Image 1 (cartoon, rainbow, N blue to C red):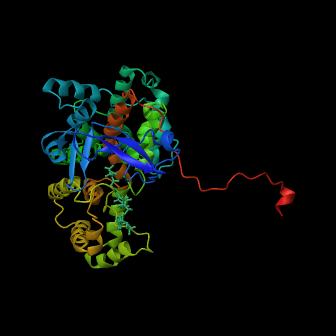
Image 2: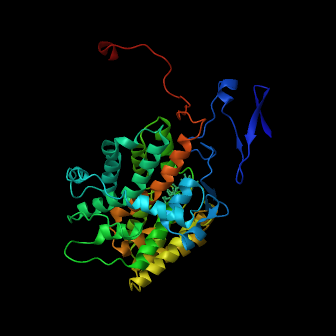
Image 3: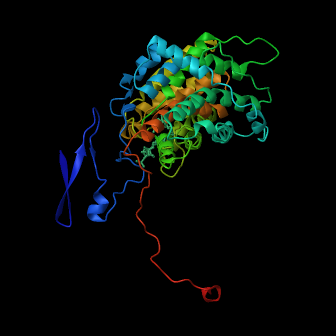
Amino acid sequence: MDCTLIIDNKALEQPVKEGTIGPSVIDISKLYGQTGMFTYDPGFTSTASCESKITYIDGDEGILLYRGYPIDQLAEHGDFLETCYLLLYGELPTAAQKADFDYRVTRHTMVHDQMNRFFTGFRRDAHPMAIMVASVGALSAFYHDSTDISDPHQRMIASMRMIAKMPTLAAMAYKYSIGQPFVYPQNDLDYTSNFLRMCFAVPAEEYKVNPVLSRALDRIFILHADHEQNASTSTVRLAGSSGANPFACIAAGIACLWGPAHGGANEAALKMLEEIGTPDRIPEYIAKAKDKNDPFRLMGFGHRVYKNYDPRARIMQKTTHEVLNELGIKDDPLLDVAVELEQIALKDEYFVEKKLYPNIDFYSGITLKAMGFPTSMFTVLFALARTVGWIAQWSEMIEDPSQRIGRPRQLYTGETERDYVTVPQRG
Ligand code: SDX
């Protein structure tokens, strides 16, 4: 199928490409050559940047599929490393494939011991996301044998290293911020239990992983693993399109995720709930969120794609209750505010008309706080989980034979050409 553009009374046929599901695309790659004009879409609200087989989102129906599998089924039945395998290789692993994958990831969890010295350069109160951007970027200074992106074997090693080392670096960032010694990974623990132990064990006593909390956090990682061409994934793809090494590309993704409009929203949402404090103050904040002159937004609400309930938020909410019950937290004031805020917002005509629903970041902070993580670690956990999605999307781009450097153009509205004026002539 084609579509016809009429420009200056000239009919221009633009090919239409259809996907397996979801919106078709108008291929305008030849448009500039045909017309000398660009398309204009600053927030990419109507722009597909690539073709992908990894994740599908239907924002109106609230659907999220990883390689065709619904997120609720993966979260219910699988574990995070199974989801990593699925996102990377496109199929659910057999028992043997899963065992081999778990073995390989487990044996890449240690970081070069000189990374310990790298951390001591930071102030203790440095934001852990600043440490993650720096330390992940610094991995390319230690692992030169996996930075040649033209070598599939090196790409695979780099991918394993990042999936495996993110929990270790995240735990190190946390330990460093609270002045406790780093805890080394333990190979007889599963991925998420290992992470919990590296975060919360101390040399002074044995640490016992709570299996309910480990399962809950593992599920939270599954929910955060990938999400199509969101801002940080698009950042990783653009960085990767220049041929930058994978560690540098993931560091760029972490930097982008940190923003409060994106992955930083889980930290911002919890701070917002703490600021609201009690349900009786909710109307005041709803009014602020609706006030055009007030920059305040309900953090954890709204989404560029989901114009229905974020399917991850539902699973997140269920996990929140599971964790609070396991920890014997009967009445969490933050949860009371969150539940009341959600109910009020979902009935308010402003939120209904703009189709603003809770997103994944609305409940995650309450859960992570209950588990013992400080708010500054919330986006670090998001980055830890999203690393596999970034890597899968980066690999798909690198392996695409038509891949070229991403280089958007612009609508220029600045000064036209003018001659230099010497200082005396400037008045
Ligand atoms: C993530 O893209 C992804 O997939 C991201 C993510 C992933 O997994 O990678 O899902 C993770 O980033 C989730 C989103 C987390 N961010 C937040 O919770 C921050 C609060 N939300 C907003 O900042 C906003 O909703 C965005 C950034 C999420 C979406 O912004 P859009 O699509 O650019 O929407 P918009 O800003 O154009 O808003 C449309 C309207 C505006 O009003 P009008 O100008 O049309 O009158 O809705 C209003 C906005 O003012 N609006 C809100 C609001 N979000 C949008 N008003 C109050 N509170 C909000 N949260």
